[in-house]
Image 1: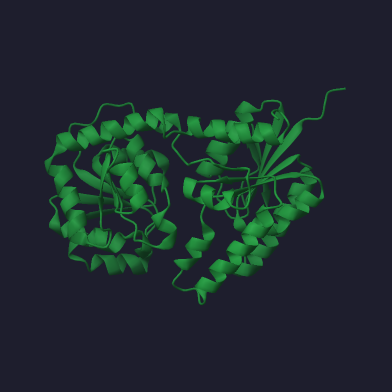
Image 2: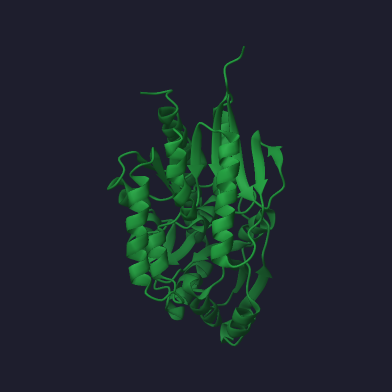
Length: 371
């Protein structure tokens, strides 16, 4: 009789199908590196299938009011997780913390994957009353639960350092691009634009970025979902005539946009959750061989300016943003050198293959492969 296969169960109640971190990176890597195990992924409202040797399960989609759908969806995720009878459970959403200890009581190994620094993120929610109190209460709750789990995985070194204070088995597994996403194509002769690809909102500095465009001699390719109300507001800016709004774009189209750009922009405003963040788009721009114009946060200055792969500016100052854009536009050789240097760093250090080893080492330890 063959031995029972180890079951690895990833759970998310809030993330979309084919999420880059959860499915394309973590689950796919684990299925490849642990061929003797079954890797399962439970999501809400998706197509059930087997893809990249990952067995994908669906629970009813989130419907109704926010708190109701969070409560019911988490319950469905828990029931599916119990039904699968896994050996190790990997939780990807803060709302799943309330079921983490239920798995522990059943003798299961449990990992909490902190994608964001949620207590700091709550401080940036302008609509949330008493956000300072909510932030402190949630951080206390989060710390209390994770102390009793088997490991914590975080998306950045900053979040790792926060959790190391409460759990010694904490490791950062950064969202660096897959090696397959790093462009090996020669730079296009004509790179005529700057680009921003991602979520479009005020706290991400889109308003001063659009305003900055009136002081430049180029155009901004703006890719991402844009609400009608915010589009109307942005269209009142003098810089809007130099914006090419692309709406939501798939990964392939995003890649083409970056190929036509001489710089990528990440000028987030200085909210608590931004200052110590490592936005994926920084590394996605670098992987495409273009320099980054980022916010002048200390961590970002160390990454971009010290490594000479980008420029940092005051994200609330349209003129400062415009000056950085014009500097790279009028110095194409410097921009090209920055882009090539950034791409080389991606190949050597900032890529998923490096992070995959950290993930695999953590799993081997928890599954008893290493002591």
